[in-house]
Amino acid sequence: MNELVPSSTGRWKIDTENSIHILDLDARTHERRPLPWPDTHHGFDDHPTHYLITEVIEWPRVGDQFVLQCSLRSDPWQRRHVVRSAPITQISAAQPATDELADTLPGRPRVRIPSGWCALVMQLHQDLVELEPHYTVTTIKEKRQGLRLYIILPDHTPDSVADAAYARIDWAEEESENRCTFCGGPTPTPGSRCGRHPARPM
Image 1: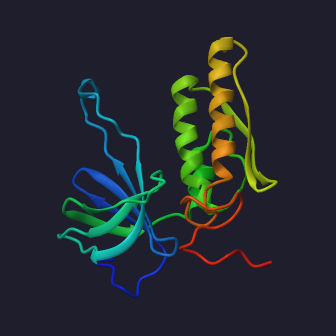
Image 2: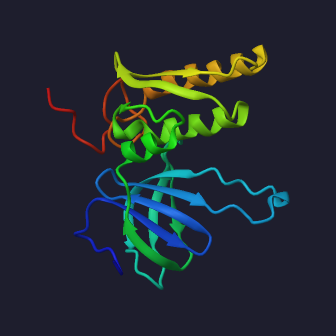
């Protein structure tokens, strides 16, 4: 694949010189995943940044860049700004978000949540790994319009670490109730979709 065009759909992985970008043209989301420095002493933050796409100003093309008008997914005011990529080296189809999440989580649980919550769970996973690298997920599902995630911690886990881990899970479960089930953007009411996407069929 050499380029994406206005009629393109689906979820795409775009490699640049310094990042991996995931463009979901159906959900209209953009995720930037910086590549870590070879020398970790630089303190490089390799946590991804999640955006909601308002407009594609320049479509991705290998050897060129893409330009998006976006807002940060976590911004309750949805302030818009322009995002430019570095030169693109490759464009390829990306895994569905739920499949990628299932391959990433320790324990490889069956993922039974809306795709719009996958980025939130990825963020939670990174937080949990920093607290306890050997944790395992046993169950991840949607229940009563919210996320439910159950884990096992090693027997030697200090109480302070366990408390911090469960506090992060509580935060993510509460946060999911106000995230669009399709794109992960903020919603006006719990368990609904945002104004950019139609309501889920009854």
